[in-house]
Length: 604
Image (cartoon, rainbow, N blue to C red; front, side, top):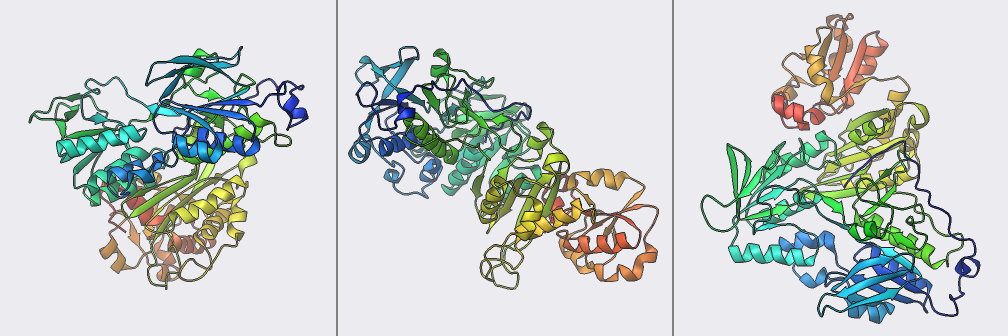
């Protein structure tokens, strides 16, 4: 998820389309008594979706799809799982072929054909057949660009070595699988801890390989906040995958042991032998073609489009990973590389290209809803994380909670770690801004509901009142989302103050603050203490032991997950104490980088 936030940037506004466009006056009128001709450059998600929609809207049109590779429509999100053997049949990933697309949709799909240039003034493209070298021109009435994003390959010495492989398409997938089998790979280094890197690490481990993930940033999975990403890191490590963060790769050198692969050099003391290296170092918009044609790009090379997916040229549209789209949370723009938004953008573009939808269609923006499976856990998120909100200058509050994913008394209840972010002041006060969850069960379900709430502009008051499905095997009478809204309500109403996990070092160092752990003594032995300086006053004894607590200091109460801490904080506040509840309790702190590094918390 490539996020670029700019809260001050307004929606892209290109000059309006000519008002005399005959299709806008009569959607079924052909241009100059000839069928319309649409050209689509790049298929897969966005381009294929656009071409299919165009055919459903216009049976008479000529629709030509150019694809540089051999596969016009494939399930790129499934490629790691084929490499690891979880998906058995390669053919399951080849969703459509040129032949099937022609038979079903009467599309003229030209694979292994590269578009060399775009003449926007003459409304034509120059194409080259990569098999026989033939070059020719094709005219268009409306053009769609769906070039996607290409793997980012920074100028690291030795990055081009054999066995250093990236994953973009089925050809890349085949190369990786062939290399692993031919070289009988036993060790792998995954360079980059994003979606592709995490999924590939899981699947290489499934093949029995010794896998190490190397990430230059301080955490894996940048779209998630550190305390959520750290849970995934712990899961990887528990399963035997080594993880090294905060370590940029310095180079790739011939292996000291000889043979294929590379030694991945981190510094003078650390060299990681790898029979295969997966390069998951991010992506960049593949936009050399529109740039040469004079189409407006942003500073990151993304294609600038308006709400109709139209570029700076009134007859050229663009969709997918290479486009800059609206960020509905900040009001600015960002680039988000996800398959779902690309497919929906393709439909919007087709509706506007054809002119056959009354009033046209607008794309309201991308919210960044995504998920990843990491062995026995699933992490999901929607909206902005804390870093994104800070970059946009949005004041916010955070709530962490750890309820069961269904009724706790019903067998099989698993802990669901949920986090919501909501506005603290001004126009966004109380408004949901983002959410993240990680669990063995229920994370995707919770985030799907919160994604709908986010897109509907709901507030934490709305979350508290949401009526969601309930039966003991599948939910709770008060769902985790209800609880999150209720906690946030109390924060906004001044009924509770919270301290975040990242504040704990400062809290410990402050002589005017004391930590009170309200768990039972047996839990301290079995689960570990939050901090050695914490005073233990079990919740049921708080009222009877008020005299032991200082009234001249701030009290930070803590428990396992935050719920008992909340009860204690409400008692103490009404008794005149200055008190905060450690948000999410020990479970949040023990999963976060500071908690792990300090060694002060045990696993919950």
